[in-house]
Structures are given as C-alpha cells and as structure tokens.
Image (cartoon, rainbow, N blue to C red):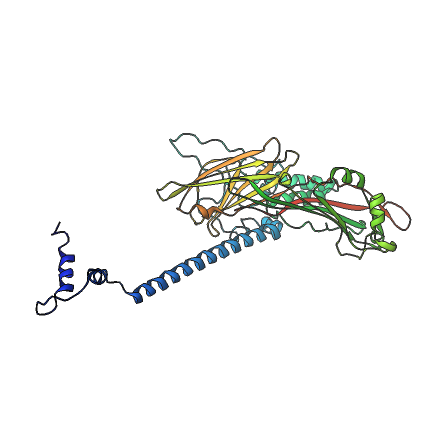
Length: 446
C-alpha cells in the first residue's frame, strides 16, 4: 500500500519539512490543498476553453444544418423548376447537375416500360438514365423482386415512339401526345412546380387552374404533427371575350361537405353576394379580368391530420461496425387519392452508394449531393404500402433527416367542380381550358 502511494507521500513530507530538515507548521488542509495543486487561473482557462469548444460545436452543427438545408432546397428547386427541360436533355439533372454515380449508368436489361404512363413513357423515348434496382449477387440468396420495373433504353422503343408520333400527327393529336410524353420524361422531375396557366391557343379565351398544396410535418415514427391544405382557383383571360367570363362552381356541394375546419375566401374584387347565393364567380360591376395575367379569384384552406395523403417511417439503426442499416416505409393514408411520380428524397450523409437489400419501386443515388431518391410511378389503394431497406457506411443516424416527399395528383380534398363558364355580356358559353393539380408545398419528416 505504501509503495503504491510512495510518490504522493514524498510530496506530502516535502510540504511539512522545509530546507534544512526543519518541520514547518502547516495544517492538514494546507497540505491537501497543495497536493491537489488547484489553480484558479487554470480553472478559468479550462472553462473558457470548454465554452469555446461548445460554441464551435454549436456553430458547426448550425452550419451543417444550413448546408444540408441549402442542398435540399437546391435539389427541390431543380426538381420543381427544371423538370421537363432537364429531363428532356437526359440525365439526372436534378441530382448534382446531371452527374451519374459510377456503377449506376445505363441499364438496358430492364423490362419494356414504354407502354405505361408516368416515368416509363419518357425514359423509353430517349432519357439516358434510369432508376436502378439492386443488382443480383451471384451465389447468394435471391433478393425480393421489386415491384417497380427497370426502364429500358433501346432502339425498338424509339421506333415505337416515332410510329406513335406519326400516327398522332396524322390524326391531329400531336399536341396532346407531346404533352403526355413531356410529363413522362420527368420521371417525377418537376414535382411541386406551381401549376401555371396552360399555354392556350388563340381560340381558347380563358384558362382555369385548380390547385391544392399540402404543407405537412411528420415525426420520425411516421406520425403527423401538422397538416395544412391550401387551394386556389386561378383565371387567366387570353382574349377580350375571356376577360368577361363568369365562372359557376358547385357552391351547394362545397357548403355541404366542407364545414368544420374549412375556410373559403373570394378575391376582394369578386362579387361576393353572387358567389354566396348562386355560386357564380365574377368581378364586381361587370368589370373584366386583366388580359394575360393570372388572377386568383377563390381560395380555401383546411387544417387537420386527416388531410395528409401519405406517411413515411424512416428507421436508421447504427450497427456498431461503422455501418448503418436503414428501413423506410410509406403508407397511403387516404385511399381516395391516387399519387403519381412519388419521389422520397433521403439524405445519406455520405457520398458512398447505399447497399440496397430490399426495395419496392426504384431508386437513384447521386454521389455529388449525397442523396438517394426512392421513386414510385403510382401509389394508390392497390399499391398503398412499400418498403426500402439498405445499408451504408456511417454512424450518424441523424444524417438521414429531413426526408422530403414529392408527388403529383389530381384528387382534390375540396369537392370543387367547374359547372360552367359563360359570358357576362350575352350569357353565351366561353371556350376554356381547365388544369387540375395537387402537389406538396413542403412535405417533410424530421
């Protein structure tokens, strides 16, 4: 015992005996204080150092969050704003400017997807890259087959598309066919884009846009924390005749089905009495709409968890071996809705590609942005759930949040319908074009 504490004993005697061997009159508390060698200045210095480290850590976390947020916003802007043009040029333009992860380039062994709507139609007609499914490993147990089929890039599909285009042109359906193809080229790109008034031909006096946007915040267990729905009816007069339009909506049905939790408001220049009594939307005093400028004439909103169309459960687990196992599930909460071009964007916290073990649907990885996109062409009552499991190098389970969900739909929660479009001048019917769009404004899991 003495040998173990010999060093401390020597220093203790040194505090008692002075130079020359004389005993110094000191108390036991003084000896203990001297042995502890406490320094007020040192403690202040350590406290300042710890405070600086804590502030630096907070600044680093804040900066990391800002960088991640900017990356997500930039990716979302690319998907929303440049969907058709980027997709038409081929490549993954929304993911790192078109870069392709090594090993995920072209895939020409998939099923023929050209006959189906949404993603396949565009990819088969020249889109260079496709969403990938996990590649089979030799001499291992077979992986569960993915529901979503891979996309095929081949000459036969181009011939087929050219033949269909020629037939459509011969029957004067070329414009319609082109719109459908452009929608498919996006592979979900352009999701969340504001529903602008469609480009109307000179013979179409009025363009109408019905739009609903969701703002949903979910927790990591898939619970809905908040859900807000906002809808608008927007009119664009393309000619003088279109500027004098009166819009008739199914006001009685709306009033009967949208009571608790719903709010409706007309533009201040709209004749509110006419709307409330007859469901007619027109400007006060018989005035006309401005030409070639979209005008929102009716707005509605609803807040409630029952409005959320889909939930996501993201479950990352640190395996303790430098690898994280991630399980992601989605569930359609509203069987009445059909969602198309569903993209679930997952930050990975690394540029390494994920090792996908099981997947329903398709995925795309982009190393430049460290993002993974889980894609489904259609999510409806017959395809209401799906799961994804993958492993990836890392140890930070928080790196996989926030998750963003993007989709398109034409299923409105508000039962609004356009019953008629007539002229204020003579009551005659006015030719028009109607566009319906349901998109998420912000749909996140954090």
